[in-house]
Image (cartoon, rainbow, N blue to C red; front, top):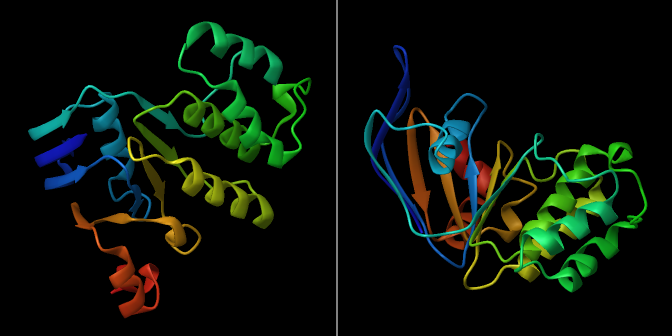
Length: 215
């Protein structure tokens, strides 16, 4: 679905990515891990077409992408307004799936969107993305702003609702909380991306992906 081939990106004299190559394929949950400033946001901007590489190619198949971060907004004043909008704007929207996902969070349809925490807003946007059958769902800092119970719920839901036709890319600087659901991982460090497709082998050998990354 998404293919980076020898991609380099710099801002002025600062090299952020240096001849990076990796692929994101259908049907897997990926984690993209790296400290702040290592190039994760740049990779997302290249995927979304907000930036262009200085060298190399970024190829995307004909796919539907949903990107969720702190700036992702909802339409209308209440959740009910947003659901009405999606039913009109996106014929792939499955209201039954959406309602099933958010039912675990005690969210009222009539609640004002402005009163919801950023963690819950991210959950709602994730629920909408899954309900509109996107090909790839990119979530920046998935668990930020959620308590332990809600973190467990959203991770379980991502694992449950991902299909063979859909991939999920979770972008984070902390592996420990998300490693349990990952199929594949992209380590971003020193202007490079190292892709590892056999996560379970790494997990077993190093007793956790975080230990592997620190090495």
